[in-house]
Length: 150
Image (cartoon, rainbow, N blue to C red; front, side):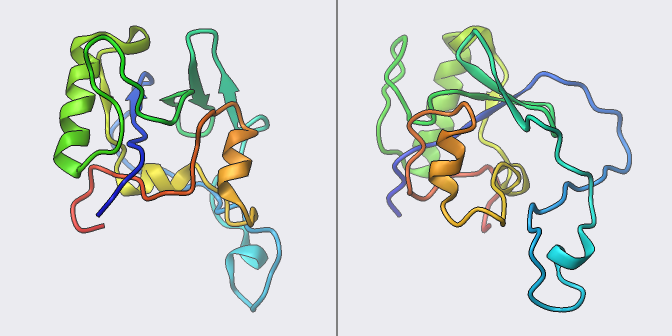
């Protein structure tokens, strides 16, 4: 599998253990009785959903996750960017942590739910939408997550 980028996240907000509420999917049009557009179950999205930060990160105001603004895998501080296998993506993130990339040492590949949470079902073109939400260099590619067999 060829993956053109490895989007990664940093957990900067501490969450209490226990039950969490899932976010709404973002679907607002109903196509069938009982679908997401009709029910709109879940936590409402804050506005704005994403906040661009001065340190070149983007904070997801719904989940508290911090993402790098540049969604590509740049070569920085001795960490070689570019296309990655899954293991190479894990190694790249470990290198970024050693290099204190953007001031953080807790970067990791997001799990599949976290990765899916940054998109919305209401947008026909999630790449363009994400690039308008403070992110840069988001491409239409496969993305790695930490979830195996996702």
